[in-house]
Length: 183
Picture 1 (cartoon, rainbow, N blue to C red):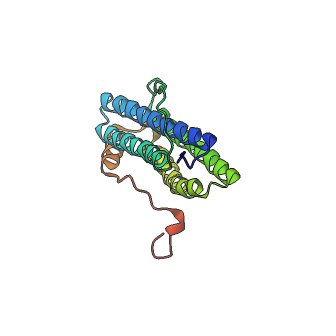
Picture 2: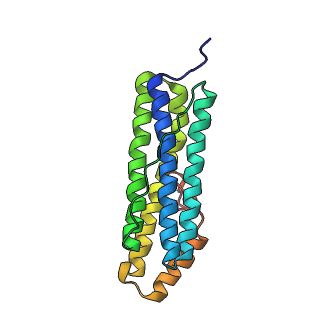
Picture 3: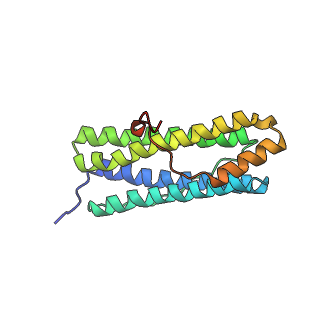
């Protein structure tokens, strides 16, 4: 008896996303190594933690496909891009990667809606919320660097930014949770 509760199309889309999350993990790991090599240990630590978070997202997709009776397929992961030229390029790359990931998440949500696969649609809502957090976090990196003076920031500003990112938690509050008392 076939116990797979996923259509072949959705199973493939979920497997593809599992692999996309692993690729994101490799990209952020690569950026972290670049930052570490440049002496930005706090930024590197932040990126290493983010790489682990992306790997965890991949595992969520794997477990979901398996729990629905499917079999996720591990594919070859493309190499990360070349090292960024600057902190601006690094943070812009993080943001671009998150926006691309959001687009892929939305495609799966659309597909689940189209196929009336309510279980997958429901599962994907966690990722929709997560991408709001991820894009907010990536955007705040760009803002923090701009405030510090961008790529022409003083050494003191960059040291402060590096230290701030080392201690910054990965969780970003969602806008819908904001209140007058908790903006």
